[in-house]
Image (cartoon, rainbow, N blue to C red; front, top):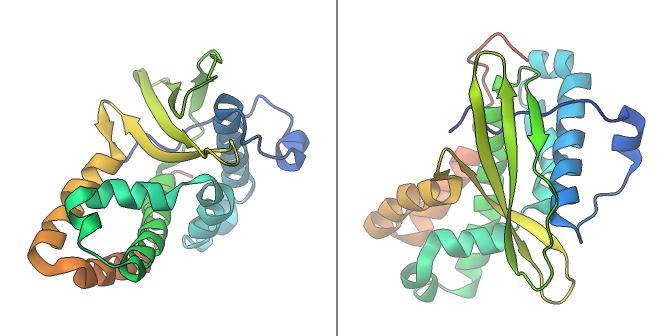
Amino acid sequence: MATLFFLSSYTVNAKEVLINKIDTKNPFLMVEQITNRTFLRLKNESVQIRQTPNLLKRVIKEEILPYFNHRYAAAKVLGNVHFKNISKVQFNQFSVNFREYIGTSYAQIFTLYDNQTVKYSPKKTFTNKKIISVSIEIISSSRPPIDISFKLRMNKKTKEWKIFDLVAEGISFLDSKRAELNKLLNENGIESTNTFLMKKSLSDIRFNTDKI
C-alpha cells in the first residue's frame, strides 16, 4: 500500500494549480486540486527534496494536512472503548500527535514519487451525503492500473469536506493504523501511545529508491 499514494499528472496549467483556492465544498474537485498541487511541488522542488528529504514533511504539512480531518481519524483509530476511557486533554494530544504521525508517514511514501499519472473518476452527486469516497485510477507503464479511494467527511456546520482515510487495493490506511496502535493502547495505555506517535513523527525521511 505504501507505494500507491504518490501519483499524479501535470496536464493542468501549473500557474493555475498554485493560484486556485482549494474548493472544500466539492469533494471531487477538492481531491483533484490537492493531488495536482502536491505533485506539482514535488516536481518543482525535486532537487531540494533529494538533498534534504525532510522537506517532504513541509510539502505534506502545507498541501495535504490542512485538508485532513485528524480529529475524526484519531477517534476512529481509538474506537469506542479507548475513546470513552481517556480524558479530553489526552484525546486532544493524541489527535495532534496522530496528525503529525500521518504527515511523516505520507512524506515517507512520497519518496517513491516517479511521475506516474492518475485518471480521475467522473464527478458524481454528493447532495445529502456526509461521507463519500472519491476514486482515482493509477496508470503506470510497468503494472496494471490500480484503483484507490480517498474517503472524505463533511462538516455539518461549515459544509466543508476533509479527507480522513485512503483505501488502496482494498486496504484502509486508517484500519491498518488502528490495528497497529490498538495493540499498543491495550498493552501500555494512552500516554505511552502518545509518546510513540510523537517519536515516530520526528523520524527522518529517507529515500529507499533513486527516483524522485
